[in-house]
Length: 89
Image 1 (cartoon, helix red, strand yellow):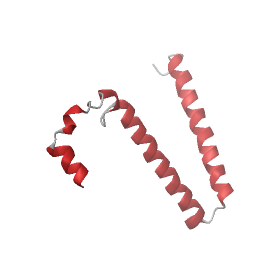
Image 2: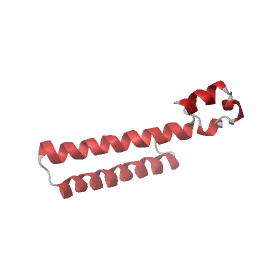
Image 3: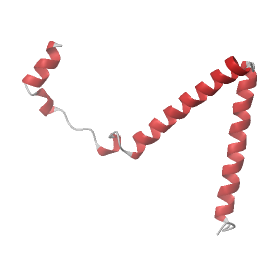
């Protein structure tokens, strides 16, 4: 506590360089990192729900996530290919 008070009263904060805009809280990089952390917490919640409430074994929950990952990759690949060949436009 005393170190913090001295930091403020002695104005040591003036000697610290500000955070660059690239690493600022509202930057694209930090927003993406936040989205990834939120996604990981959602996946953890879903895993807990599947194993505890539904009664699926742990390996079954992993299999669900593997299939979801493969399916989402398939869909994203098809959409990417369709946009590339101007199929949707």
